[in-house]
Amino acid sequence: MAVASAAQLTANGALKMATTSQAYLEGDKVKETKSLIAELCRHFYNQGWVSGTGGSITIKVHDESVPKSEQLIVMSPSGVQKERMVDEDMYIMASDGSILSAPVAKPTPHKPPKCSDCAPLFMKAYQMRNAGAVIHSHGMESCLVTMLNPLAKEFRITHMEMIKGIQGHGYYDELVVPIIENTAYERELTESLAEAIKAYPKTTAVLVRNHGIYVWGDSWISAKTQSECYHYLFDAAIKLHQLGIDWTTPAHGPIQNAKISALAPDGSIKSSRRCIVLDIEGTTTPISFVSDVLFPYARNNVGRHLDATYDSAETQQDIKLLRAQGRSVDVWSYIESISTQDALVQQDLENGVAGAVCIPADDAGKMEVIAALVANVEAMIKADRKITALKELQGHIWQTGFQNNELEGLVFDDVPAALEKWTALGIKVYIYSSGSRLAQRLLFGHTKHGDLRKFLYGFFDTTVGNKRETKSYAEITASLGVDNPSEILFVTDVYQEATAAKAAGLDVIISIRPGNGPLPDNHGFRTVKSFSEI
Image (cartoon, rainbow, N blue to C red; front, side, top):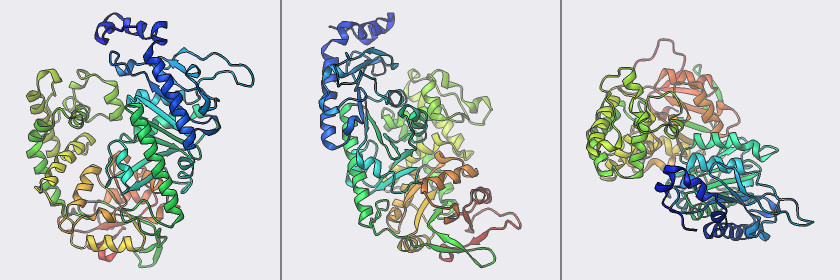
């Protein structure tokens, strides 16, 4: 059946009628997708991912004349021997998840056909990430890796070649996969999976403890490739664990259980430590470096950066985030729910923030949009706004600066030796800063002391929460999987952050560095002037 262009059909509602007509459902494109799923199921069965009728695959019917969001969905059924599936076993669904075509029942001993219990979860990936395919695997590796630490809310791994096969990641990056808890019925996982997708905007997978994994991609090729890479990395982590090797550290050294003891204010031994979380400004790095070097560089290069990268997906995403800046709602949900025109009136304009200007729609022209963005960014930087949109754009600008050797990261001279000492003791060191994780990695990756990221196990930014809120530190504690929050030492120069971390049960030390602000009298925290004192 010949299908008219999407633009012609959408105008009068004929698009939906055309793609759901019997002729289209029986056409070559749908048949090819059915056959592809059956082939992939046989392949995944041989990998051990969909044995015992477990697991499922769903793929959108690729048709260039139909917008991706409106393409039909073909889905494998539940309770079927995946290696024996044939084209006629598949369900065909509309883009909203409604069933358009179901398989005919087969004689005994076959069970009556049933749409996959994973269907609601698949739809979340389609709706929230505009996926082209979603794969649910029961592979042993994806199950066991969630059991290595039954308290961990994330799987983390770094410095492994196969990380490059995961969308948006490179060899030096830390791959983070959220872990959600299993339930008796798969459909009951829908909301927790949706929350994980929202909380981890960079992830393309969600692990289900003691169960398996959901992986999505822009196409079936992307989803398949990433599934293979994820399973490889999970298998590697399990084997490294058996060998006593730590897969979460750049050095991949032996797993250490060594702990250090921190002193209470009275000088007594308080408790052992497994992790240290460090602030950046005023703790590892002079405040003046950020205010006198990084911020001016970002401010002076906003226009140049936007002009050079305007059409890139990364910069277009930054622009969307900036349009949505200042809102109290979740920015990712906000972006998905608003049109460009709706986003023109910013919260800053409503609140009368000095320097804020209206950002015109894209059709106003590139230069007008850039000019408005530059004005808003300058105002936000001047006000030292802690906004995710600004931090993301700054990180991308600084990335160019570091790559061009126009910037060099700065840390206090005692920091490298302390990081090396703590790592040798088996203590995992993390960074928690209001700057983006990209900016954090850039700062520690390009210092006069060399690349210090080899001593760092992970980076947290304000996506886990505001640094002055107790729940942020509770989230970090859950992510690190320690038995007790007191096993985490948090070092910062900000009294309000110290108070919030202490309320979450963390041990806290306040950093006294040149240029830091004054502390309240009788603040009650131990202080240090150098990491050598810790």
